[in-house]
Amino acid sequence: MFHVRLATADDAQTLGALRTELFSELGRLSASGQPAFERAAAHALADAIDRGDCCAWLAESAPGQPIGSVVMLIYPRLPSPESPALREGYLLNVYTSPDWRGRGVAAALVEAAIAHARELGLGRIRLHATAAGQRVYAAAGFILRDDEMELRLLS
Image 1: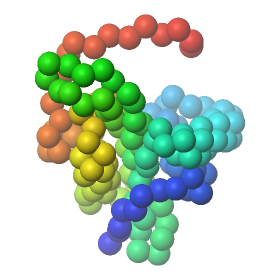
Image 2: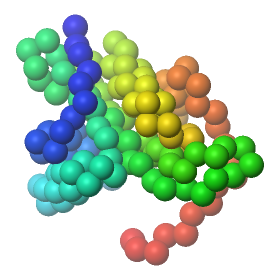
Image 3: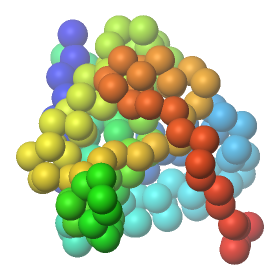
Image 4: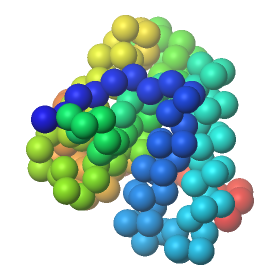
């Protein structure tokens, strides 16, 4: 059994640790870089939650151990012909600890974020998906897009 709850700035250290696990597992973060990355992530998350630019959720096992997380950044946007909404969400850091995968943790986290986005009146939620995550997002109603590009200014 597990439950999902809205995180607060007091949970930033836990959220930062789960973000570190995610990037380490993806092979994008070396062991030597983990402590500094975790501190930076925790600091950024605490600040963003305090400012209201970000909402996050934690999944916890029955004994209260963190087993997963999701973060939603909230951005201003201009209205478009398709939507008059002035804000949208960006979902990131969807992560489930390996021992808990396949038990609905990621789906529950994503559903919590979607419900909150609806409460806030956000126009849409965007995300980048790994191949492994696409089925979770598709089941929640996300669709693939192929019209985005990026320019990296810092590396």
